[in-house]
Amino acid sequence: MPDLSSLPTEARNPATENLDSLSPLELAQAMHIADREALAAVEYELPQVARAIEAIAAYLDSGGRLFYLGAGTSGRLGVLDASECPPTYNTPPELVQGLIAGGAAALRRSVERAEDDESQGRRDLEQHGFSAKDVLIGIAASGRTPYVLGGIRYARSLGALTIGLSCVPGSELAEAADLAITPATGPEVVTGSTRMKAGTATKLILNMLSTGALVRLGYVYGNLMVNVQPTNTKLRDRAARIISTITGLPHPDSAALLEHAGSVKTAIVMHGLGLSREEAEQRLLVARGRLRTALESR
Image 1 (cartoon, rainbow, N blue to C red):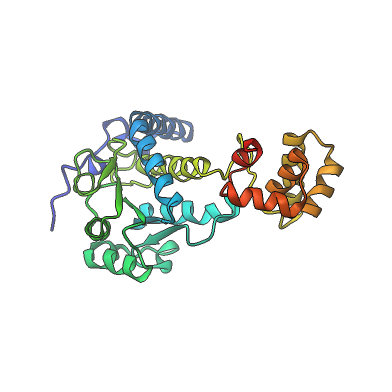
Image 2 (cartoon, rainbow, N blue to C red):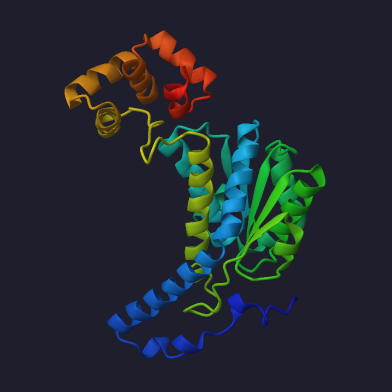
């Protein structure tokens, strides 16, 4: 058995040693203070996050995909982030993918021993056709999960970009990856429960990585979700409001334009440049879907 006692994520937090004696308000305060520590740890890593955003965007822009690989809480957070990209940005489901040790069943029920199989990390990537043009983010709070390390080592052997996201500075994962993001969150409120501070820091960074990369690729205009697909009443209203915000058209006119154009970006280009739907769609195609580029190019 490996000796994990020296890991910061496994250490006992002296600030919460009397946790079971606290009142409900004191419990909430203790956890809130710990969450602020997670935020500070993330802030320290922002330069590394920025490097990762730029690299991920470049790989995706060249036809690559983004994969998350993790076990337990780390794996679930990766799957969650990946699953939110299609409804938010209308990305193809295969563009951002989350893989978890133990497969889909591990999303609802713990499959703890699955994380100890280093070769399974490689096999899961092979099953999804992972290649040198893709990006792999290995997620492991402890920085030593065999499943994740196996995947990272395989991806790196192919020449793919590898990013290690952990909460233990100098960990095996940090050493194995091309780029390391390591928010040092320290001992947990409940000893060893890395779904807390470490999980919070991980979720914040995954938000930044996927959002940042997709913003760089033109899935957002300003801070508006211009790739939204009007597939229900709420989203049709949001889409029309986005068109109104950018064009200045009244809401009813924006809704009518959306109906004719078929998408938010096409509607905006049609109105802004006085083009037909076909002309607007062609301009967006040339601009590789980037609305700002389509509007500014002449």
